[in-house]
Amino acid sequence: MKKLNMIINTNTKKSHINREIYGHFSEHLGRCIYNGIYVGENSEIPNTNGIRNDIIEAFKEIKMPVLRWPGGCFADEYHWKDGIGEKSSRKKMINTHWGGVVEDNSFGTHEFFNLCEEIGCEPYLAGNLGSGTIQELSEWIEYITFDGVSPMAELRRKNGREKPWKLKYLGIGNESWHCGGNMRPEYYADEYRRYQTYCRNFSGNELYKVACGPNANDYKWTEKILSLLTDMHTKAISMHYYTFPKDPSNDWNNKGSALDFTDEEYYATISHTLTIEEFIINHINIMNRLNPTNSIGLIIDEWGCWYDVEPGTNPGFLYQQNTMRDAIVAACNLNIFNSHSDRIVMANIAQAVNVLQALILTDGKKMLKTPTYHVFNLYKTHQNSELVESLCENDIAGTDKYSIPAISQSVSVKDDNLTITIANCSIDEEYKIECKISGFKASSASASIIHADVRAYNDFDSTENVAPTAYEVKLEGEKLTINIPKCSVVSVIVK
Ligand code: AHR
Image 1 (tube, rainbow, N blue to C red):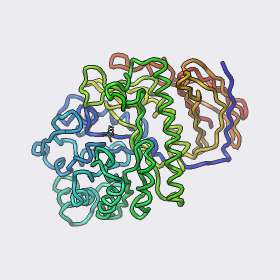
Image 2: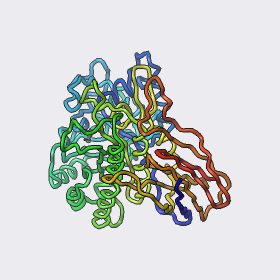
Image 3: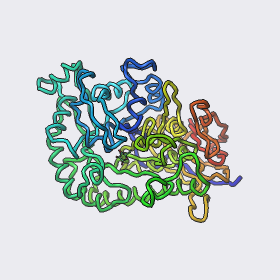
Image 4: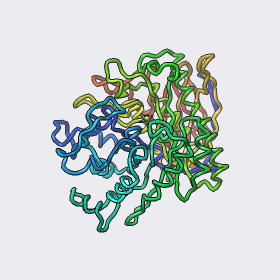
């Protein structure tokens, strides 16, 4: 076992970790909403107003802070008025982006906002700028948030909701450089300025408007957008970045399998995951130059692993399994987002249920929590805490082609509790990490671990193959010793 030293200095507070960094994304895609989160009031599966009770409980357990909806690409084809009122008379349409299936609009605005209220999370709407009108978006805001007398507020009341809901986060367009209209940044910026003008703050509600930001390392988009928008219009820009084990531009149908991968592919996946940090830093550098007051935040709107769909499933449904590899990916991403929380205000993993790097998978009545879910559960004490300085010696893991730092870590403090999260990305080596904690009176330490073979996963007949367990760490005065097995994620709470 190799030894690595780590220094934690709680006197150096770096930035506030918004709880929204632990956010989620749910799209009308495959079985994320229908037959996932939403089964309908008449389902035999225990539900509250059509939402699965086991999913509500699971979302509450991880303290889900924010949920983005209704897309994704779907958002720019979504017409919210189709999804209100008596369910049997709601319009049926084709979900052209995702599998060409019938969308019956039985999950709409009321269902979404009631779900968020039930969980206690912030709703984050993705507004339709691609194919919708300004009037449509402006009326949606009125419908949701206006407390007085107006056509939209009356319509809401007629549909059974007297009081308005609160809506903070409003994205205006999704991937406007791609499925949201294939726009040039100059054109998008002008459209954005126009659309956002008519998104009003009603009845004390204050919108936090989010402009479409870049894909991955599209610095030109960031540069242009930021030079054309000001913080008068914009509170944040969004960025999307997906991890593909194999470059999808070579062959979209050969991105790599979720379950069947080589060690080399594992290290490629982690290496491609870690690349996000370079992109984040470069986008932040542009933001620092063009928005030096830091009034515009960066949202990592969509992130996670994107593999080939599970054999035999609808290619448009993006259903994939989730292994210990995904737990390592989630842990590394969340550590990176924490460490840039001076600019990153929110992040949403794609997606919550049954789609891409899902936290939850369902099969009829059955439901399981993936390794990724368990990482969010271990990391939840970082929410709304203060990032503190942590410096860790590192080792190189991986292969000649994909060499990566073995250890990824993050440390934060809140209410006299220190949260230390560490991922050991090596599948070959375990480490003894000796932490020296300064500026903090440590009297006890408890830990949890997610540790399994890199290819281990939960399935519907054995849901606990990968699950957190209590873990022994040693605290002697200011010295904390953590033995971290290969391919594991550990969270330590020091009090
Ligand atoms: O999450 C799946 C899709 O990925 C989203 O709809 C889109 O925004 C992105 O391209």
